[in-house]
Amino acid sequence: MSDTTLSIGSFEAEPGTKVRGTVRADLGTLTADIPLTLVNGTRPGPRVVITAGVHGGEFTPIDAVVRLVGLLEPGEVRGQVIICPVANPNAVYQGRLNVSPVDGVNINRVFPGDPDGGPTERLAAWLFANLVDGADVYMDLHCGGIDQVLRDFVGYRLTGDPDLDKATAELAGSFGIEDVMIGLTAEGGNSHAAAARRGISAVLVEVGSLGQRDEPTALRRVDGLLAALRHVGVLDQDGSAPAPIRTWVWSAGVTAEATGLWYPEFSFDAEVIGEVAEGDLLGRIVDPADGTEHTVLAPAGGRIIYGMHGLTVRPGTELAALAIPWEPDTATQPNTLQVPGLGSGSDEADPRI
Picture 1 (cartoon, rainbow, N blue to C red):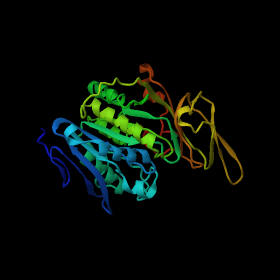
Picture 2: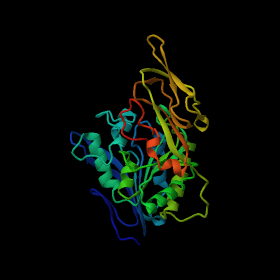
Picture 3: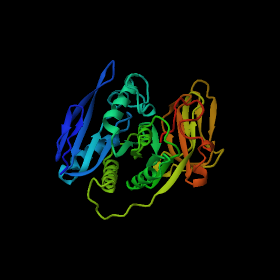
Picture 4: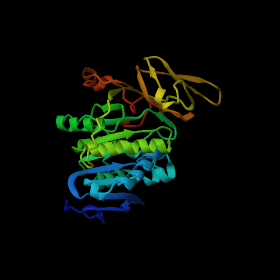
């Protein structure tokens, strides 16, 4: 039996126990109660951290990890599992958007955070210091938000460490999700990028569109998480073979250059969003005052991985992200790719993955 107590602040799980509760994070001008489940197994193994609710309006990841909590029993677990179903309570319960209503900051652009910064930067620093840092494996769960259609994918960042990159690639392929997106560097403020820079095997898992919370999608996510936990040795293997995957890199991110109403040309069906060639029409932005139309063309070819479903947009709003199949010769030239989050007018410092 493992003889290590699992502790987050004053919250503790002795070996062979599962505890649930909240831990209060000091954010300077306010506090946040962070819900946690600690599962301390009966046998030695890796420490795995799973977060959901980093963004508001992304409901299925929260639903899935709460269901996962009910399935994990310490007697069946090797190592330790830390599950945080609502990592960003202000955004989840108040804003329901990527940015926090407290300060207008997207937390997944500021990791590993700043303990002396604003509330969201302090929250990122608390989450990173208390949950992520020191993990062997980190899984950050997202989905297409309430205004976004998205194809399921797993993303991870290349670090240049061959052993870490190999382990993370194998982890990314263990969820049973066909499309794997490779970020060409570990730079930026995403939580999994910051974790990768710390030497942690970290992935972003995106399943579901439009903030869906239907049971089949949640159960599909749970199955993927269980498969990943078997892969890393937290749970016993079941003998199943990994599903085939396709690997991609971003080819372009497209942002709005005008304020108005967005009318995309691509499908809202996440399974058939489609592919475009450079110069193809992605959609139109219409000024509701005078009917002026601004056409939006694809700056590069590729498959549409996610796109804006919402009607109202402003300059800098991300409209679509395109990816192309991964080719090593292309993937070693990150400067040739216009990645999501770096389009004209965007104030985001790094791509989604």
